[in-house]
Image (cartoon, rainbow, N blue to C red; front, side, top):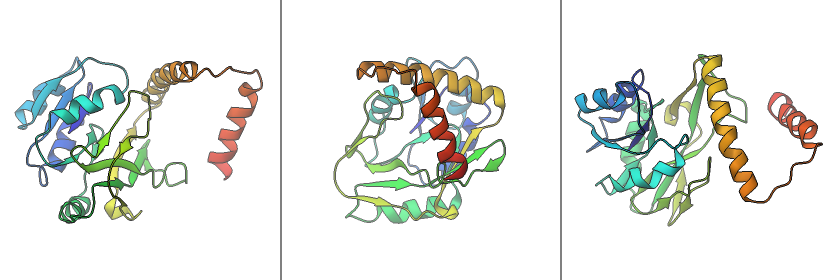
Length: 212
């Protein structure tokens, strides 16, 4: 299951990388203005439409409902499944004791694999039996899980490759969109901002990412 918005440059890569292990490929297109949906259809994917909400979480449960398989591999259009990860996924779904699996993610930013602790192993909930995981609509929300979980080893060969940011403009655009939704989420929980947050929070983030 792949969620996509204006991903004509990368949709073929993710579909091709998943074909070796998928009985069907579902692409949910969120009002793309480019050829994302057209390319996906040509590659044999089942394409569905969903309103563009600006973030992926509100489309998750809708997307999952379109898949017919017992196991689901949930992907973003800017990701890629390596051959070794595909082999490990085949092994995992043969294990009757596992209901969902967290996969380490290799984030490629400006052409480089970022290995700091903030970015690696960056575990994500992506492989699971249908019905064992569900999401709420909050940005970067942790999904609700049911059953027995498993983490793949935090090694490069088992990592989901994430082609994260290619340019500064892409980074700034995504940052701007995400902070709008994060503000809404914070306000919904009744958080009151303090002027000290402007100093304390950025400094703490810098110290964590750059030094710790």
